[in-house]
Length: 118
Length: 402
Image (cartoon, rainbow over all chains, first blue to last red):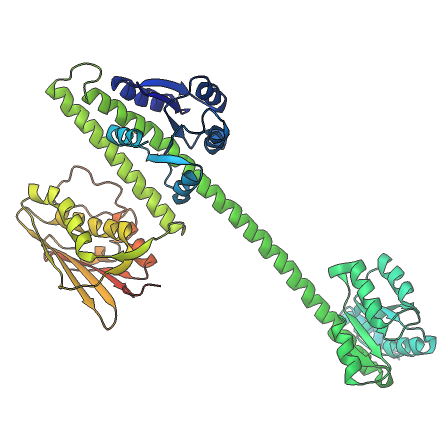
């Protein structure tokens, strides 16, 4: 069973995505900020991480950086989520090591495509 | 009898205050300095307050404590050359250095050039000194000083204004970034909640419930589309939208637009016809954005054409002028003259006779116009009330691949 860690501060997005994933047999953990995220990711290493770029305080890329530099999480594929259409965001995400990029609102199909391609 | 004695001075005072120039005269020959001061006393409409220094170091000390409108400095001072002294004054005062005139013993060109190169605004030959020469040279120097100072101040004001503009621009960018996130996030969540219910992940859903859920999803999509339009228009207006131009086959783009358009066209029994010349080369433009423009024109044409009508897309490329024209022609009600000029304004919508389910924000044509302008092209409309409309998209330099 695939383990997914969702790093997202908006409770509704977390609820929506985790309901969808759990109904499809995934094991889901949720982390609303950087501190919880690192704890969760290192304690039980997930198979894939969904990360909201727009975490308050600009933490999104910071967390991505920490995950890549941590020996237990550096190989876990990162899927970045964003609501922004800022064009340089995609490039920044790629440079930060994103395995995939999802623009909100995204459909369930897009989500599963991204996960299965990791 | 009235004594006319002191009349002159009184008249001068009545007409206006005399100008006052504060001078620093740096010369180690006291006789020459006294001569200059005498000459200056003869100037009628100007009062010179003269301070004297006989060496570079004395001049520097005085300048450190008082300000002057002008400095006259001998080129050959006992403790340094005029050039070196000037450099020291510049080091001390920076941009507050008063305009300086170098006084040279000879009147050779070499001395003059050297004086100006060292930062002096002018030079004068001691041999030619007179009231007129002093007055003119000092007058010009003071004026130059004033101009330089006002340019400096203007420059500082411009920089401050520019910094403020850049700061506000960044504020605006951040604002839209935040608004985008704050609106799209709950929208994404809502859409997904509806999808989860509709997919029966939390229990069965009957057909009536499914229908409502389907409408709810449509609403979410409408909000997304309108919001994206608003963001696009804002970015176009603030010049923040980047075009990605590359070689595109036109037919493929038109075909895609037509396929998308057929969804509504078929429901109104409207025929979409296309006409393209054969063997067109690939053209240089932003595929996503030009598709956005054509889709908008096509959707409008379909919206305003009655059931059973025809919408045509006609393309023509002039290889000599490298101009591409795409005409979207409808057989609808046409546009009245009074509306034609405003049709491309943002938020200006014409009420159609046919009630459409949703008319949106009406930004489509405003966005289309801006995208086309950014490509260096032009979008205009030919129309007559009752006689349909033709929207013409013209792009130039389309086969110019830098």
